[in-house]
Every structure is written in C-alpha cells, then in structure tokens.
Length: 239
Image 1 (cartoon, rainbow, N blue to C red):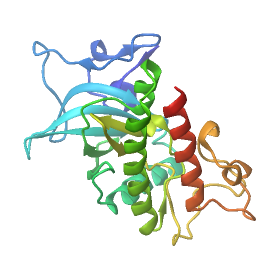
Image 2: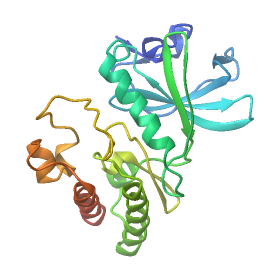
Image 3: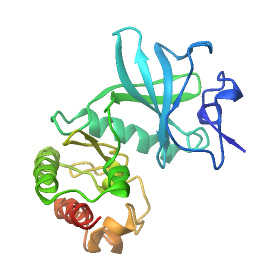
Image 4: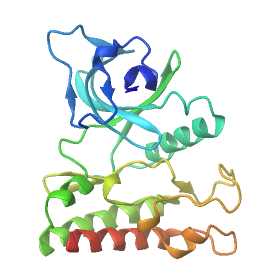
C-alpha cells in the first residue's frame, strides 16, 4: 500500500512519487525531468524521513530563496483535535527557543487540508543513523554531550521540557548536534493538558523512571530530560 506524500496530505502529488511499503527509506530526490511540486510557496525537493506524527521533506522556500525542512502532519492524524494541538504545541515550543544547537522553526501554517511547519534543514543524518554505523570516539561524544546539555539547559530556562530526547531526535552536522522534535514538549507554566492522567509519553529506552510511571504524584521535570541525555550518552559510548 503506498505510503507517500499523497496520503500525508499532498493530494495533488502524483502516485509515482510514492514510496511503497518495504521500500528503502533513503532520501528520494525528485528528478529534474518531473514537474515541480509545490505546497504553497515551498517547492518539494525530496522526502527525507517520517516521525510518529509527520513526514519531513527537503524544500525550497521560493519567497526567501533558501532550503528548509518542511514537516507535515500525517493526514490520518490531522482528523484528531488532540493531534492538531500536539502539532501546534511543537511549533509553539520550538518557536520560543533560539539556541545554536536547537533546530530553528520558521513557519507554521495550513494549505488546504495540509498542516505544516518549516525549520532548519540540517545537512547530515540523525545521531541514531550514525550510531547504527559506528561507535563514536569518547572525545567526540563528550563534545556533543556538552553542547546538548547547554541546549537542553537553555530550553529548561524557558520552562520547556523536551520529554523525548533520544538519538533519532538529535541531528548531527559534522560534530555539531541539533535538538529537534518538540512534539511531546511540556511548558512548565502551561496548565493545559493534552493527555489523560496517567498517560505515558516518550520512548521507553530513554525514559526516566518517573516518566515511565506516568503519575501526577511524581511528575516529569527537568531531571527527566537529563536522564534521557544520560541514556543517549551511554549509547554514544557503547554503540
């Protein structure tokens, strides 16, 4: 069954650009022979990946003449109000942060039934992809960790907890790390609840004990992110 931009909300994309189930997840460049494809002012250049809530594309902002990453909320998730609120929360949390090691958000909007946000396009892969190929040297791992600690510390100073720090949410360009995907981020001064009491949000392998418990008696806080960073650092050292 095709799993493609068409099903993610790009109803005007030809089916020939789709990726079939089981097909390689490598970046799919759209050839120059094909007609140009657009979402609003953004020219779609390539599909670069998919997360739990959205599909990510490399695009050209034709108004500002620059390359950015465009993330669209998956079409089936866009029908649910809670998912819409989570996607909007990712945009708001990310927009409140300006740090050299946090991916910068540029735009948030809707074109017909497609809800999207745009952010820095990082040339390189995720830390998860790198660790599948090699174990990082101790000094390299330490330098990356120090920058990640500074980035997360900055987010905490803005009262934002990431809640899903893991290698796949850390992009690497050279030896420069970038924290991304604030879809589960929590604002400490925000009383709005987007999940039922007791709901467990995050990724088990990197989750702090209090986060795994999901109880209001022992709530998630800044230390939960530090635990997740520690688990990530351990994986960097051990492969």
